Length: 304
Ligand code: HEM
Image 1 (cartoon, helix red, strand yellow):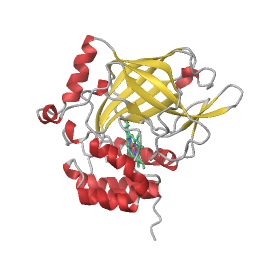
Image 2 (tube, protein in one colour; image 1 turned 120 degrees about the vertical axis):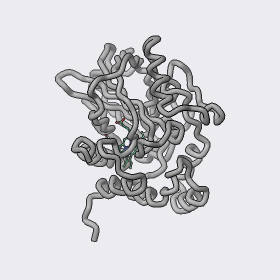
Image 3 (cartoon, helix red, strand yellow; image 1 turned 180 degrees about the vertical axis):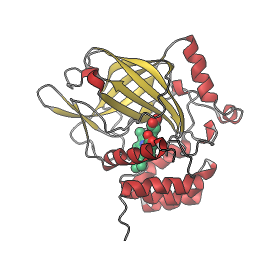
Image 4 (tube, protein in one colour; image 1 turned 90 degrees about the vertical axis):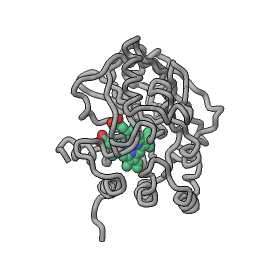
């Protein structure tokens, strides 16, 4: 019987399907880390005791990435892009928000995700085969919504024009201990803009990096941080489901990305790392990511 922890099986499975690239993250392999500043406007200070959401400024590291585990894929082969943010808190503590430009994920549980990796072999050429998708949806109807999002997805025109969602639910805990479910979303101040297929075809590799660095040379690249406030009937454990569109949204701060960070590639953006005033929900995918990211980090920083 297989005694391997599931997170290890999942990471091994990613390597089997997409290949092994020593020194690279096992997902979102190609990307770059930047420095920036987050300014909280205080709108969340009554909802959470988190120090970085009380009015004021903290330094951040931000990694923009292409989702493929294979770093040789061209930019456009990965329409899913990542924006991982690490808030630098007092005394060396950190808190992370890890987002992608999709509001939902395709698997509800780690077991399903790991099994899906086998079915998704044909993603190798950038696009899944229709027959594989049909097979996935038949087996896991809850995954239909995310697969539809993926099928229709156009890459953002720039890392600066993606809307990035942390997908999972977190709880904000206020100074009195009251808890409230929220979801995070980064809204680009440059506006959401996607690539047309014709412009995508003519894009050189590392287009996104060059574009971002051109923008940074002209000034900071900014995002608003929104939280979506959950109601009692909204699921808190299911990354395959969006909440109703009419849920209240609150802008709680502004992030300005300013320049490339030096020697930051080994940073681990574990989405379960939070701080006082923020708790992970019971979402099993969210909690599973902790171990998977740690295994990937250990391998890549040991030259594997
Ligand atoms: C079963 C679920 C998942 C597994 C097993 C998984 C696995 C991984 C692994 C192994 C890494 C590399 C970590 C490192 O070496 O630092 C990674 C990175 C990443 N993942 Fe996931 N992931 C999962 C779900 C998600 C979801 C739901 C999101 C959506 C927000 C996501 C977004 C990202 C991003 C943005 C990165 C790059 C982080 C960075 O820039 O360092 N992942 N993932």
